[in-house]
Length: 358
Ligand code: CP3
Image (cartoon, rainbow, N blue to C red; front, side, top):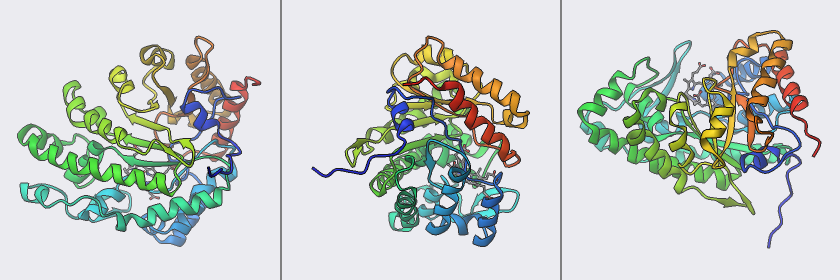
């Protein structure tokens, strides 16, 4: 049997599997991003966000930037969820200050019929970045791979960009549910292939971002978001290089549906800040670990307040003194206006307050 060099810090992977760790591991959604001056410098060199995301050297550089500043317990691949619809021919572009857009959104039956699966050759820049980042990490911490959920990707593909009310997507859902299902089928197959390629290239855990599932009704969430996310989970590579590849599922605004989310095949659920971790833990029982859930705007408070709030989240999770199975994170991505010194205060506070001397 081949042996693999062990990780220097595997607390993140252990916590996702609800194994004991000497402290609560932490990483931060969007940890590589515009709040870091060094990210902005690399982005400038690259010329644009896509110039950065499509170049494995730059991706490696920015993925490691937050780790060189803060003792984070995981790295996350620098990329974007919208690379997948881009590789399905929709033509991703960014308008400064307006976020992502697609040149060819899905509007008609014809558009949906001719939609291909994501071309994995066109996503080679992502798997190349994964292998290069793994090399550069040199076993310091595990690398997280990720994808958007089939439903969240469909929202962008149908709207052609961001939206406040998902009017175009929901109109299709109510008028032509068959078309939405057909898009979701293709997205599901694409996401499975994409995540398995990331695992093959070296991603040691994977996260499925269902950013917009929370905009659906109770019934529609099950039918259009959760069922497809479940199918993704069921077909992911479970073990790679002798170790289980844990899966995290995050539905922003999904707190009402925790019981059904806990049974969807993920090892951990990401939670936004609207839910109390003690309640969440009671509701999911011992099915899954939990990741979250500090309000990202807490980082605009002075360090003393940040420390107090972090301690509160840690205490909520360990309400019954069983602190296994918690990964600390923000409830959503970090704001670009955050002061990096406040992130440092948070990371140190989480490590210090949660130290349990194992
Ligand atoms: O967490 C990380 O550090 C990894 C990188 C990462 C990015 N996007 C980089 C990025 C991850 C995990 C994502 C996921 C993503 N992208 C999601 C799901 C997570 C979530 O936030 O709910 C979504 C919905 C997107 C779509 C997307 N990409 C939007 C809406 C935007 C614009 C956001 C903004 O703040 O302007 C992007 C662009 C993007 N993706 C940026 C970064 C760092 C900012 C781009 C820039 O440098 O101009």
